[in-house]
Length: 215
Image 1 (cartoon, rainbow, N blue to C red):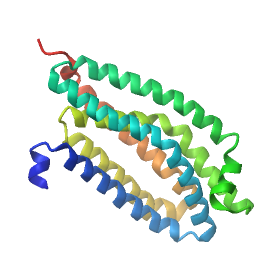
Image 2 (image 1 turned 180 degrees about the vertical axis):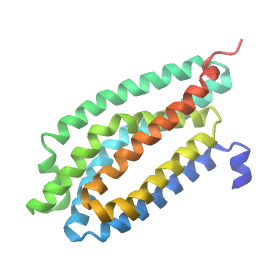
Image 3 (image 1 turned 60 degrees about the horizontal axis):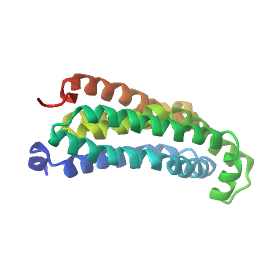
Image 4 (image 1 turned 135 degrees about the vertical axis):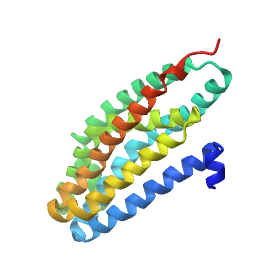
């Protein structure tokens, strides 16, 4: 696997990023479980709805990896930057719809997903949704640009970015959630999204010279 990664096998590097993400989620879930049943139910309900609205971003990012790879290999590299911009515009339109959901019908959706009318569970689930969805733009831009770099055969920067996300979840799980409780759970991913977005933006800026067509 390591050899395949070093040789630039895209599927392996993307699988490694997914593995790192999953490890971080498991570590964070352990700290959530220690908070109690109401918080667990609220986080699970809120998370399911947030993940539903993440799906278009995931589809855009996967498409961006293929698009970047094809144009990089064909020498039409200026189209990669155009593709990234177009994907980000589409994602911003989707984010607008997500914001409408978060601040209008989200309570009814939480009741449907959790099967509960407990005011505490609904309130905490809404907190998770209304903290996460407003920070979707950095997350969407992050995964789009990260997969664009993957398509351009840059493996290390996206993997380091996933490592930063893992480190952030460890810090929250071990130190911040035990002190600040459920609000820290809600803030964990948005904070790591912003940090990783800044990192991957810097990595893409360093590669800007590769976004020019070959003569």
